[in-house]
Length: 127
Image (cartoon, rainbow, N blue to C red):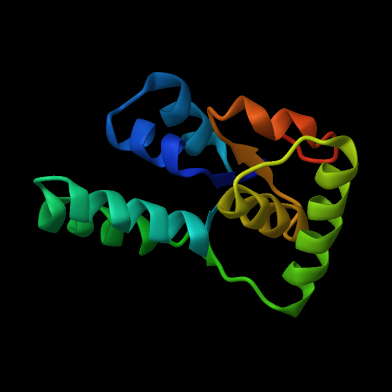
């Protein structure tokens, strides 16, 4: 399975959460949306172990199975569709989460997250 990690699941992975460890181990590839990378690094700046956390992140992102997922023009089309869908249904999501959903949909990956609000997007595979 091809997966993308949300910020909370990256944190769970670093903490050794067994379910996330197993999901990551069994994944054929792991995506890390650029938005998630920004959220992770923002957390480092607010914490007390920034340099240590950054080293761990670099070790993770240097793995051959990990790919940073950058938004591009195609991503904006996915974003627009998700945004309009949510607006029509009256189920808004935070802007960062719409970008995360858009890039995960673009790359046809399953999103590993603890955020239940992603379930309002039936086209998004969650793990």
